[in-house]
Image (cartoon, rainbow, N blue to C red; front, top):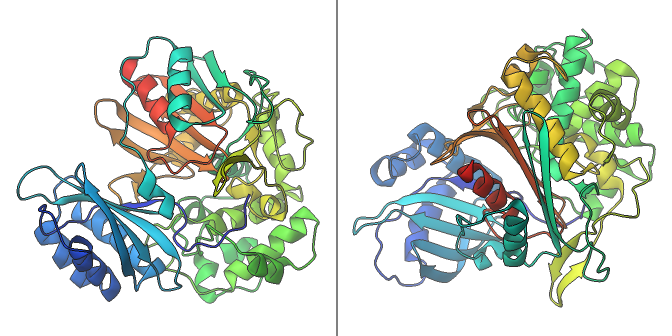
Length: 481
């Protein structure tokens, strides 16, 4: 995982609105939106959205989403309008710390257009190409190659599972410098998909009686100094990203060194990180607001280690990988096979091979750091969760699976459960899923309960394209089945 400087980190999506659709002078479409967010006032934001937002997302979710962006980065400054075309306005914006972000405003069609959403991400999103739906593909291998070529990725893989029958397609090579073709059983970095591995482990510990959904931080970590508000935070709130624990989506070297010093033993590294997190002020009143938080999931890993006396990586291997007989899945403490795809990232010199291993993988293991799985194993894991949603026991009891997948509004019109995003995709139906990226690979795991199908996709390059190419591949498969 890279150590880079950013504040907003992962994509935030919130429905907002513009005043008009006509050609504009520099910044006029964004200035009102930025002014409203810079107020950091919920009433001001709500009034603005009431009069100008389209009806595709509930107002309460829009307000939460815009407040989340404002609290993380305001005051914002418009630096440059990049383009206005295809119903989108793209602009470069800086935040309170002077860090740059791409703002992409999507407008509804018509002469009195309102804005459908505001995407906030790294400046690279301003270069994203229009979405392609891949409706004409005939074979999984053909789709794989189409998406790979569009993404300019060295390799991309897709796997499906229906009633446990696995189909896999892989296109491309392990790296730009190694022209060996990627095999179907080679492991890829899955990034934040690992958050659902964490909640699966926690589910096992709840079933065994070592934890409860309502177990509080003050109860399970009584000797860890923390802000008083955190003592009442429950295990379930941590899994739902509603704990108020800082998001910690990006890191810089100085901060990491301050938190853990020269410590290298994994459980001690994670405990030091948890202590640092829990002595920061909550970003919101615990239990009241959604905020995607690597920090919250890092604390879940410490909790699991506290109640078992076992390192988190071993818990994942015992409760998930070994339980499901996944032979091509690895944690950061394993020796990875040499026969595997390499990561890549865009640099000023173009696409270059890049792989990041180090203390961040250890710190954030329970948030997905240093987790590697083949697409077949990832599909098998997804099938175990889909089976639970259908009432079939196995990896966990059905009632545990269903509670882990019970989504609450996340401020974008979607829902977030315990390590799973929940949304209804137009033309496809209900999707439970999660994406993941360590900056050099992109991954997507999706369950489609109404279709009885699991679809996964991974590619070996970090990409500014949104939706990410693996998600485009997943949706193309789901739309055809």
